[in-house]
Image 1 (cartoon, rainbow, N blue to C red):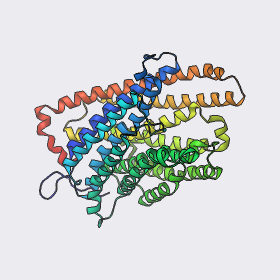
Image 2: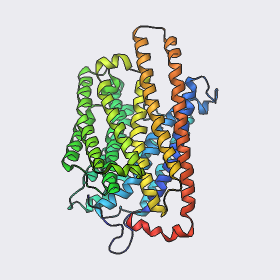
Image 3: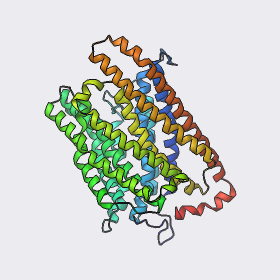
Image 4: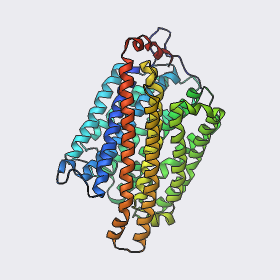
Length: 468
């Protein structure tokens, strides 16, 4: 992979480190909010909800805040930060406008905050994963299109150059994302009623992950592993096979969320085949990353970013193997509408992509600040608490889903399945507390490192930005 230097010929910085910091800082705050919202919502299942009778903080609204914060606040801002770093580095050109970047940062995050407030006020749109209030949808769509224009400008300028594979994924993701948002937030609401709208909505639910988060996440992994290890990517050919596999299979696998619904069965069958076929993507990505790391496993001992990328890669493999099993009609007769699906979703968005973004934070922030992380001990606690917490949550909810599904299939009274689920729900909450404590370790380490970066020695060393 060819990286362009951080200084252009005129001496101006190629990468806008300020906007990267802004997106990372606010993403960290959103992640903490998302964890708190999820943990609070889990208490409803244990009859320990702390805000009974308070409509503004009712469980259903808090749950929507949890999911929206994960997708549009934490993951989106973390991805934007890495794009502002990777695209100039890979193209040799800065983004279209730094001032524009700052305006878009303010506008986008104002829309995120407005979404949270309006959802809590009871003004959510009645579409799954598209609860952003209708009045905000056009503004979000325009903001995303403008962000794409700002980020695509250096790619267009460099079109005569050979593109590293991360740029393939980034460009595709930037093209797909506005289309996916419009598809999920406008078409079911205004154009396609009934089961037609449900079909479109099912595509949006999965394509938000598959055509926005996934291509950006793979681009991040393909970039950081060779750079952090100072080793070339194992196989460029495998990365291209994975790219075209993603483009071909992922748009079609979405209806597997709505199996046994009134959606036409040919659509459901096609989604099952595509969901299994998409594993071409998964196995090429996982093998490529692991084979690259295998060139020097010893680096994992002291290289924090690689540790996070490795766990996310293994989680990616496991969750996609699980997906190939759970989309079959025979498996769906047991796990449909159970906590199995919830566990799967958490392992994807937390265990994979959140880990990859966190790995990028551990890589970039010390280089931007000019100081190493304040405490390796806190960093290790952060990693292990999140890794163990999300693993326990995944196993626990998969087991809960099997128990629930078998009880429902045997026609046991529904309340009996609720009683049988209670130990699993306690375990989920405890694993959520572990994740929250782990993130608290990160926030502490983050603050102490930031404080150290403001000292005179760190300020003198800030030139490290030019070579990061």
